[in-house]
Amino acid sequence: MVRVSAIILFVLFVLAAGYSIVLIIVPTIVLEGDFQAITGKSYEEFLSSEAVQVSLSHIRHMQVFAVTSIVAGFFILFAGFRKAEKWAWWAMLVIGAIAWGYGAVINLLNGNTLDSVVHLVGLVVFLVALFLPLRKFMAR
Image (cartoon, rainbow, N blue to C red; front, side, top):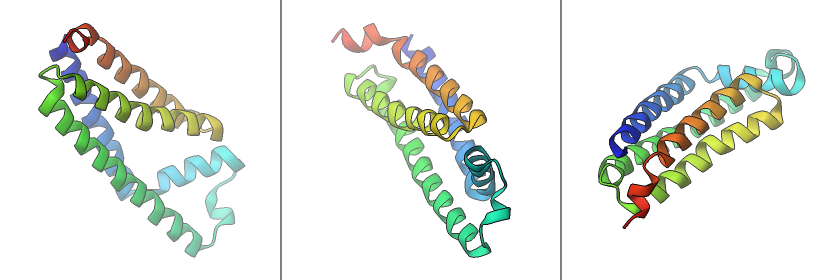
């Protein structure tokens, strides 16, 4: 079960990394989606070009943090999770709860249905992969 979970987590991390890298390159996707969800209008109608640049800079900055977390997740996955070390299971739980959970909650609160569904699916897949081998991790 640990091997199946590790494969699922690896695929999930690769998809999350791809998503984050795309948002570093094209951060307007997030800005438009969130602005539409909250205001019902395009950001281009309201924000000056300077405000857009500040927002895009912040989005890119957040995505660099996301990529950093994903890299940490890969290290945890390969250093301890595949060996069924208890600390790695807890570390994965914290990473998933913060990253996927926060993304799902904030997008639900903002009314951004598409992003909230993506984060909820990610959270469910993550939790399934994490709890699948639970006995193996907690037996020691």
